[in-house]
Image 1 (tube, rainbow, N blue to C red):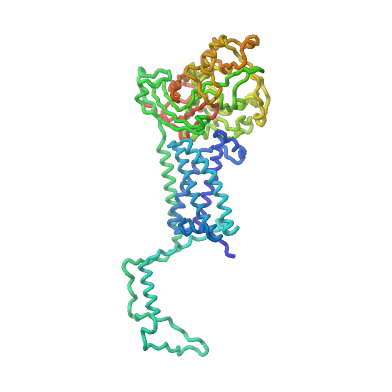
Image 2: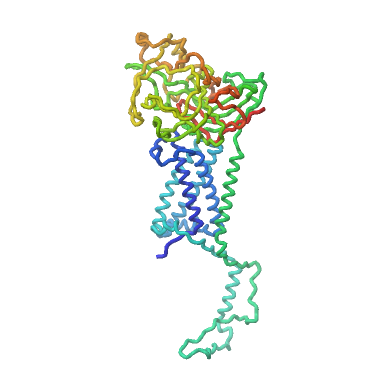
Length: 640
């Protein structure tokens, strides 16, 4: 049986598509493993890449765009477009005989694949460039990924049904591009038919004509040589000229059969290069305007300062976080000014609830318990305060944390596994500046926690025993904060595998309120539903001045059902950790956060605020680590 083959252009483009799709799938799954409720992807941890995930994913996307362009041009130039033509005849084949039905199904699957690939490219572009990059675009991208996998299986099965193993193996057997059929020219066809009719005219038109004599030179016993019939036109007469408008089709030159692939490749390279150039040139920039020292804003969380009203905000959509009404997305707007010494920022973002409950304590019959849902593994996503973070780096090569975040349950082989199943923040060398505002811990007293990502730290004994989560290179700057947890948990030894079975232990409050009624009033209207925000003016911390150290005798006076704050505030921030000042307000479903920091603190852990520095921002809705994100960094442009 003759081996089935496929033109080499299709084979080349096919395997480029397979390779790029495979890379995009593996890197995409690693990226998706960081989204809420998708840690199940870690079951494939050994198959998924660990480093440069975002950059590689984008490079694979560019290749896919190039292959899509090349395939479109190649089909048109090579005359092979009929193989994917979805016309009435093909559609009728869906209810025809087996081979016709299988052929029609194959073409329909191809078109579903084209639509799915188009959806992946469009939604991926929207997410990358931050245009309509919301929950819906991410959902379509996720669904289209699985549709692609389904297509692969159906594609293989359909072709096997069409021609068995030989049909499948033809994608490994190249041949030359088949010459396309000549285009039908009606005028030329009529001319040729007229000539043929004239040559085959009946003998009745020539009554005196006799059959041609036998060839006298024919040897005996051999059949006579018959000459082809002559045209009515004599040899001396010229053939009829081709009618006006008729075109001669030149025979296809075999040496030029590679032209369709060459042309397609040239257009694909040009298109991919244009896409990369557009990405390079369209850098998202945040201008930090120069103002006089007399015009600096007051840090009170009020957005009505005159300096803010005259500045057009930079807006970025962030997504893939936790909560935010189940969509995990919020739009963040940024304004920035400086007076030559200090830089001032106004961050506003959408948040449906004012969430202040940070691991509150509730007294039950058997003692005190901490309300939580995931805090034992470092992934609290119910009873956590709202937070906001800013990342500053000198590197523009960092795509969504490629050099500051390392995914997977154990990014560092010799370090403890992550208790959350998610990755770790750390760098190979140097530091990335991180500011973190917390709605209850430190934030109300005017400080943003100044922290950094650096090289991986050695695990503490508690981290090595999986009592507390190992955090890689994420650490606070030198100094002390003014907040602490208002409870003590007895140490427990556990392994990551046993976290799901760990029950909530009893805790002992560090401090009890001096005036229980005053503390209850400060909490405002109490609701333990994590999706309901706190009332205006509520605060979910106790200060050292309004509390006393825990004593069993005082504890017996507190009734069952009492709720206490999980945070104690005392003193001020100190050292490098105190470099960032702030104030925040929540109203009408939005947080407004005003921030001030020196342009250059002189600390090795801080990044100077100057042109060329890159920024990222993220919001947390009563979630410990499930923050929103955006892909492209924001470049700072500082006025002189």
